[in-house]
Image 1 (cartoon, rainbow, N blue to C red):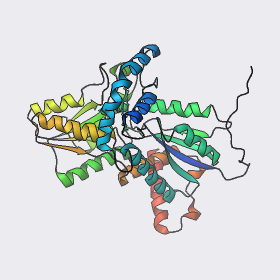
Image 2: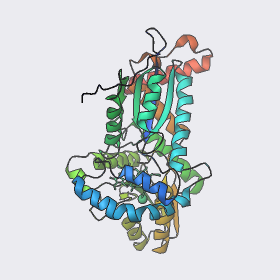
Image 3: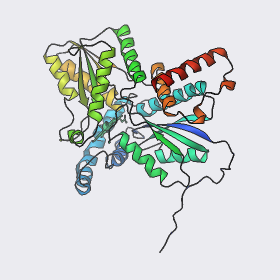
Image 4: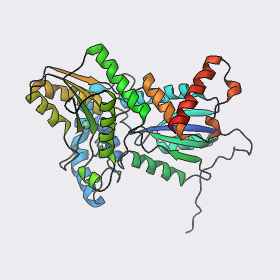
Length: 373
Ligand SMILES: C=CC1=C(C)c2cc3[nH]c(cc4nc(cc5[nH]c(cc1n2)c(C)c5CCC(=O)O)C(CCC(=O)O)=C4C)c(C)c3C=C
Ligand SMILES: [Fe+2]
Ligand SMILES: [Fe+2]
């Protein structure tokens, strides 16, 4: 039987009606609740993504359903329960706070019809749902900003897939731009440096600064994934900005899953080695995580603290992610303005800038963006 494909459209859109633009922040996603059932549903979607696990499908289906989804949900739910808040998952709450703060900031800089929204690659709010809602609200231009400073096919690449899959269902897809990575963006490095300096100012400096990034299988690096190199570039730029020499900081990779070799060195191994070498006071920062989540709050700030202290260390500090802090919003706003050049909604509307201070700020920002472009 022949069927006609039905594309989703917005029949209410009239030529001449006010179109608008949006920035869509996309993060990984998180379970609905810290329970084995909810974690199982989340992991089943996440780990079925062929971008995340590059194995023959039949083999992976066997491992996923035969082993991982039987045991991991209970263990992960236990970890999630330790960091869950009354309002929900830290990843979701921190990402939403970031989106709201960026929305407010962009509205003071630009008076066009723009909005910042949040979507999750796995779970809710789903990328497809948010994009369709935006299309129905006459949004004709969307800048996609995955909350991953370093590109990996497993993270950013998968966000691109989800957006592309949605576009194939739309009658009149909006204009789309992607920010593939911002690992070396000066404003981003500045935000990280300011956050570490503020921490030092308040709590003092440790003997070493460990920069821990989420890992991926080493096989993906050999196949051409730029993630490892971008992590190293972020670490070098940050160390240079903080005037750290090579003996004062280390780079490592956390959160490995399964038996395959992942990017080296492993964070948990490095921590124990440092304690064994006599390092007493260690500070850890996770420059690959835009906001705090399970991997920073539970793995780094709880499990790895126990490891370091258990191996002879005396003081262990986790320096929080940038979250919705002002320097992070500054960096994100600058990134957005640079990537939306030529989109009229993001132009400066001088007539709407009523007070002089606002006008001067907008001009300064516009100038910075022009210089860095
Ligand atoms: C098994 C393969 C995985 C790859 C490859 C991977 C890459 C990757 N992940 C992030 C960011 C996050 N991962 C988070 C949790 C998480 N990651 C994996 C597995 C892989 N990640 C699992 C199974 C989980 C769930 C928790 C668990 O069971 O251990 C999170 C936190 C989510 C939350 O709810 O807080 C983030 C963020 C990146 C950036 C990345 C590639 C570079
Ligand atoms: Fe992960
Ligand atoms: Fe983990």
